[in-house]
Image (cartoon, rainbow, N blue to C red; front, top):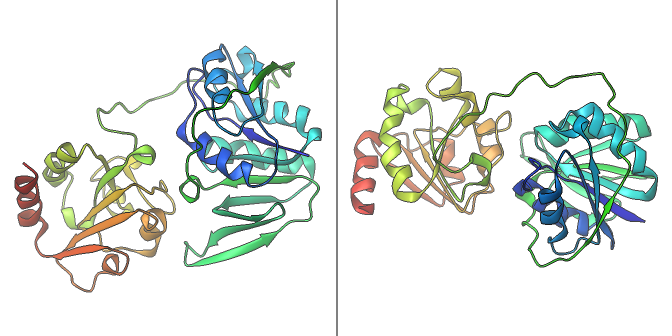
Length: 309
């Protein structure tokens, strides 16, 4: 049977998380389909058709899907679920809102945040804040899975899948879109950035985060923070990296004034290269760092900026 990936998109383009999920889906079965449920979403469907390894793109185009309301998208998934052995979505707020509803209606267990596919019925996922890896085998007739995108490479372009329009389900009427507040930034989006500069409690205040801006500017980096910095009100919630924040795996992660609590490490330890700057030589962050600098961040960061100049 085929594998279905639920595309996360903005009606005009695919989110990067969808490409990682396609890679996971391809490891589950030989024929992979993508569901694009949206409104005026032809551009997103065309983008999905060009992803390598995709056999078919199913398009459900209706006003009820314009804002990705979970009740409506889940109903659309259930309407076509009978033809699939696996249903996958990224482990983002979007996927986590839809798939539990699908799993409950199908009366199967959901397998959450997988990082590896060992076999079509066997998967690996982190537990205990990433300190252990559980191998999960499912005998359910349909595997409903969210994918931790940092565990899989993004699928390449080069596909030419067929696009098929399908009947859209009616609006459930259970929820309505009220509004959206979008944080605007000239910097890359945190979960998609190749370089991230993060600050922690050691920054001392929100104003001191300005010290990191020249470094981030030179590197073309996104800016992040630990939960301690967010809870202290130094920076906004959407900067938070960690188990209860955003899971990231950039090419370069620079942790400044971050001690490295388990919760934070769970969200960034898969980064390709980790640089830690902390005055405490015993800070846990150094246990995962590829490069560590012990010293005063208020002296070291300006020196780094000068060197990069």
